[in-house]
Length: 563
Image (cartoon, rainbow, N blue to C red; front, side):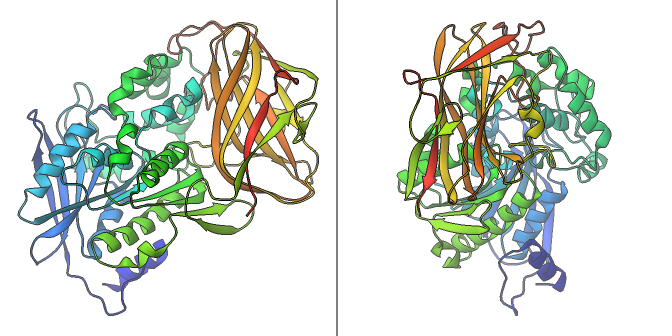
């Protein structure tokens, strides 16, 4: 390996090769045509060590352009380690034919690509897959159905289904949907309805833009990003794309139009087939990643089925820190399953970072042994002792002045993660309940949920629940949250799936729960009328009453770890 190659690996924190290891020069065969059953041709580049006979192949399928800088980096790192890497533009992207329809064609096109690849004389028939975000979804679209199975999968910040991330708890995830669709709608290498093939100049421009899986990079496209943020206030939401990029964007239109009928996405949901996947799988995610819940469900399904799987959960979001961890993880996994270096197989199945403790912990399963689901009851404040006869907590939500959001699992870097919630908690349209100072450290590791008894004045509304950590100086920072859409009159028992967490509350800190009618623009406004989200413009003010008495105990179920 060259000095530059070793330096690159060191900067990226990759597993080292022996000092005297050498690799042959890397050759790149560009724009190989891969025929699809419907006559469309998709293009792929093959990065391969020169010389030698047939080799196993590592397949990467991307909607961001095979010439994109990050994808090329992945390919070069893997090729230097003796793997041949096939990077393919998905349908309708770059020089690949057809129309790009996000998520819809990846199973059929992926399986056709896999069959073509195994038939090539330079492939020995063994194929592994790697990638992050959408590049991980393209793996799940193939792996459960591949025959013979894949040799290995490297799954970074992704999941076998994205639908639950479009509509968490039934609410429309406006911020992430508009950020991603706007960036996809302005990429030069993409082909849409009536589009034409992107050329070399367009692929070159793609190299200067961030991968949508990382979120828009504010420093690189400031005007675009400001337009997108302003467009989040546009009504109706179904036309926010025109405000953001000046024209309709198919993905945003599909997500908003189908917010009330998610069965539209059924063919893009591969979660029911995860347990049947026999390929060894290595996963990386983060506590602030928008696909965390789905990825943990995938891991549990594989683990319960007795499959070989591991997962790493770090203190990051859908960002560059995560991608660095993904690359290191996938290199070690391929070294183990294609290169014969079994050292990577000797770690625990679950490795996670306990936030605010500075510790990495290893476990044999998720949730970890020693975790005890413990209810924290909403009362006059917060209490572990059980429900009491407190009066309902009331607040009023107004879609014309929606309750704002701070932090959380967002695509835009610098805006997600853990943030000071003080300004939001001071608003009149939220209810804030705070517990007593902790007399010892409190560790939470695992799934979090809430059961809230709530009544809305209109029979419609979104209930947002957030758990915060209040330090000794009184600064309140978000730890986890969740939302649920309510579409029933009367008193409703709302079950809310919140974001899983691994977090230490220090002695002397206090737990705080904030209740609100939304978190804008992370989630689209609920107009209180029941009108479909894509078309809603008019709104009604929504009064919320959260009951917290003995007959209607509202609580959060927290995963208290006593390890």
